[in-house]
Length: 125
Image (tube, rainbow, N blue to C red; front, side, top):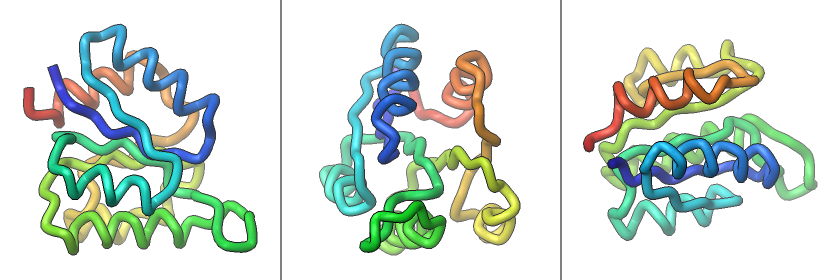
């Protein structure tokens, strides 16, 4: 069983992924903002992070820079947990993956089976 932190500002998508992961026996915590995500990770609870790339910026618009900053923040704080990024725009992440900041990029929409396979492969159980 893994301890997974889901980070997304899409409440519906987040809830669906949470249900899929919990039904497979994983413990799941959620964060709706990059700041909440970093606070959760500072507690050292999660051994896998699954996050969206685009979070709302200060103007209330979806912005991939928010997710990129979150990825850097996770690594700058010394968190070694694998990070899976869900995105409809995966090309924005190629550099991050090459720098080993991101363990896996998954293109939305992500099927439940694909998500569970990624968790099995990456999570420390």
